[in-house]
Image 1: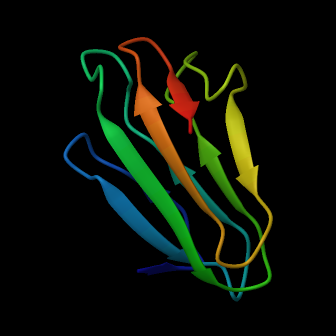
Image 2 (image 1 turned 180 degrees about the horizontal axis):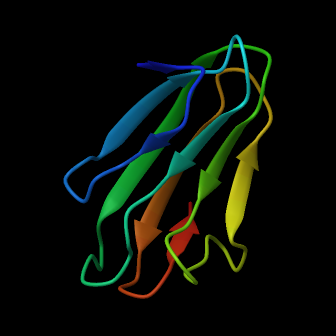
Length: 88
C-alpha cells in the first residue's frame, strides 16, 4: 500500500495498492514490450485525490499516455499486447 507519493512498478509487480489521502499519486507502469498477456492491477484504497497511471515512454494506455482514476476505491486492470497497455 503506497501512500501519497509517486511509485514506479517493476516488471515483476502485478498489483499496487495506492492511498491518495494526502495528495494525488502517480503510478508509472512497466514497459508493455515483451510482456504480451501480462496483467497488472492498480487499486485505490482510499483518499480523495486522484491516481494517475502513466505508460512507459511513448507507449499508451487505451491510446493515451496516461489514465486518471478519479474515484475513491476505483481500480484499473491493464493487459499488455507487447506494444501498449489496454484497460479491461
